[in-house]
Image 1 (cartoon, rainbow, N blue to C red):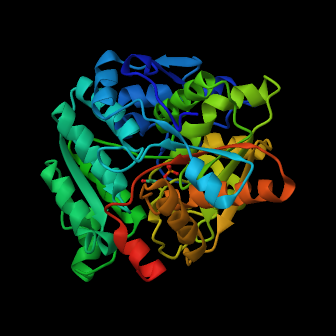
Image 2 (cartoon, helix red, strand yellow):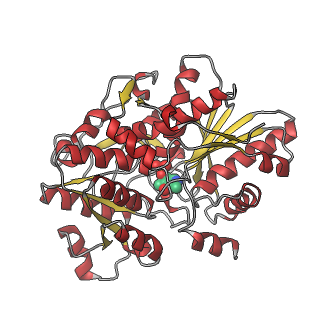
Amino acid sequence: MKNQINLLPEDIPTKWYNVLTDIPQPLPPPKDPDDGPSRIESLPKLLIGECLKQEFCTERWVDIPEGLIELYLRAGRPRPLFRAEALERELQTPAQLYYKGEFFSPTGSHKVNTALAQAYYARQEGYERLTTETGAGQWGTALAYAASLVGLKCTIFWVRAVYNWKTSRRNFMRLLGAEVYPSPSDQTDVGRALFNKNPRHPGSLGIAISEGLEDSQKNPEAIYCLGSVLNHVLLHQTIIGLETKRQFEKIGTYPDIMTSCLGGGSNFGGFILPFVPDVVNGGKKVRFIAAQSKAAPNLQGEYRYDFADHAEITPLLKMYTLGHKVEMAPIKGDGLRYHGCSPIISSLRHLGFIETVAYPSDEKYVFDRARLFIQTEGYLPAPESAYSIACAIDEALKCKETGESKIIAFNISGHGFMDMVGYQEVLKL
Ligand SMILES: *Cc1c(COP(=O)(O)O)cnc(C)c1O
């Protein structure tokens, strides 16, 4: 039995899968709040034209442009699917464990899959510069990389509390040619108001988003990019699940359980969505489990309309949410700390297709399980991906008790080479 299932470069998917055509109920559309200017009417100024079109796409399959396929190949796609034989032996489980290697990403995470698409379209539409925010830093690095490859400039507003200590990632973004500002910065009105009061303001994702948006709205040569939550981002990420599905087909296997970590829902969605029509229409039974942190268990919140950002610049989205003003304690897997879950995943959860588990926010439990993975399989997962591993191991241990040999697939959304401090602090290395 080969423990690595590979696709050839010529096997790379050439279309993304749009789940909107297969969700049993139409997705509730974005809405304007009762007060203030229309957020919906301002969307064409906020988003790349092609991405906005994809947001409401009604075709089941969407062509990936040829130039973008070239970029995906350059970034090392297709990525391998591994059978975790060593981990299975260690756990003495009858279950079969498979993991998708998104950690083979040039910047460290799956976020390059949508960053490349957004940069590609922005370039096509004549923009010269991309603006964005970043929290943990993975999205900023992915966008800096994508901008650099297609020849665009990139401006990143980075939550100051994280900017200050993640020096390797900061240097990586600058090496890629991006301008990186700690947020709140002195570059925008929103930022300056806060910065002038307190130059050491720790910042927040909400403030950084507002800075990125203001920068792009005031400068017509620039356009803002978002790294998760929205339908077009999940669409781009389906390349993960489409590859995985072909890899399972190659070995004549089909998963019983699929799990991944979930912050805004883009890697989880990208991984599972191509399997969803088989379950919704095709009579297959797959348990889809989202692995979250108790610091931000958004799928256990309320299903209602809420803003996607702190400053209420975005339209209202129907999603599972903890409330857009909620304070969430920082964690090492900070990419999972977001108040709401993507409308697509929220809708599927509402219809009963998605389970969720939330792990303790001290992260000892998940990092201990990640350590087991590192010592058997040899790859260093991102702190966020440790949650996928914890959930897969939990399910494998349940199989050990029941004697069931289930097929468990999990996605490893990134590597942790730039986040060692997290492991060091929690595991006392
Ligand atoms: C950003 C990030 C996440 C969480 O975001 P999703 O949109 O939920 O996927 C998970 N893992 C890694 C490595 C990330 O960078």
